[in-house]
Length: 421
Image 1 (cartoon, rainbow, N blue to C red):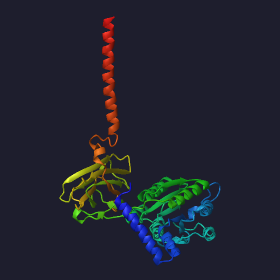
Image 2: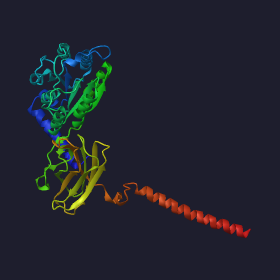
Image 3: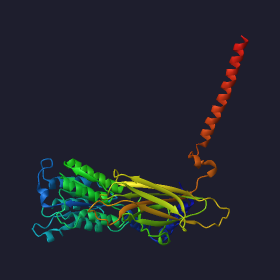
C-alpha cells in the first residue's frame, strides 16, 4: 500500500538525488552510495590446534575449511564486501591470557580480491586457543560503518576456551547495540557442549546454527549465507523506548528493534491523523532459558491514559518468539486542519528467567509500525469481519430467499394439481 506520506518521501528522495547529481560528479555519488549500502560479511575461522584432527572426509578439519573457503571466494557475489578473521592462529603457547587475545584480521572487509584472499587462507596452520568471544567482538568492529546488511559467519570445531568471557553473552551484547548484525555459526564434527554454545550465539542475533561433517556441506552452507547477505532486506532501526509515554520517542512507519528487561514496560509514540489507521505489531524473543507460561501485551492508549485497543498473546514454553498486534482507525474529521492524535504504544512482557540465567541485556524486541490511509468504512463491514465480502453474503441471502419462495410456489401448485385429479 502506497500512502501519501510514502509518495512524498519518494519525491523528496528523487529531488535530493537530482540535486546531488548537479553538485557532484555522477560517478562519485554512485561510488559513495554503493559503499554505504553494500552488504558486508566477515568469515571468522577457528584455527586452534584441534583443527589438525583428520576426521572430515579423510582430511584434516583445516584442509576441509581451506577447500571450502576457496570455493566460497570464487562464488562470492561482486556486490558483497567480504573479510576474513581468524582465532587461535598465531599463539602456540600455554599462557591463557595471551592465547585469549589471539584473534587477527586475515583479510579486511571490503571489495574482494579473490587471489589475495586465497593466498592469505593458504598460509593458515592450526596453532592455539579458541577465543570465540574476543573474536566476535573484533569481528563486529570489522563490520562497522555503512547501512547495508551485516553478517558474521563463525566456523569452529570446539567450544570457547577463554572463560569467563562467555561468547553467548558477547553475542547478546552485540545484538543489544541494535546495529542489525546477524551471527551464523557452523560446528565441525560437533559435540553436545559445542552445539549448545554455537546455537546460543546464533539465536542471540537471529542467526542460524548448522552442524557440518563433510566438506561439501561446509561449502554449500557458507555459500548460502554469503548469498543471503546480498539479498535485499529491511534493516530494522534501533530505538530506545521509555518508561512513560511522555518521554517516549515518536516513531514513523518502519521496523524497529529494542531491548526489554524481564517484566519491563516500554513506551513509544505514534502520530495518527484523521482518516488514517495505525497498524502495529510486536515480537519478543526468549534468547535465553525462561520459565514456562509467559505473555506479551501491546496496548494503544491516549496521552491521558485511556486505553484505545490492545493485542495480547500467551505461550507455554514451546516457542522462542511470541507476537501480537493491533489496529486503530482514526475517524475522519470535518476540520481539514485537525491535528494528529498522539497514540502511546505500550509493550509489556511476563517472561521470567530460569534459575541462574542472567537478566541483562534485555530480551530482543522487534516493533513494526505502519500508518496508512484508513479503509473505506462504507464498504468495509468491520463489525462482522467481512471486509469487502459483504456483497457475496448479500447475494447468497437473496438467492436463498428467492429459491425458497419459488419452491413454495411449486409445492402449492403440485398440491393443487393432485387434488384436482
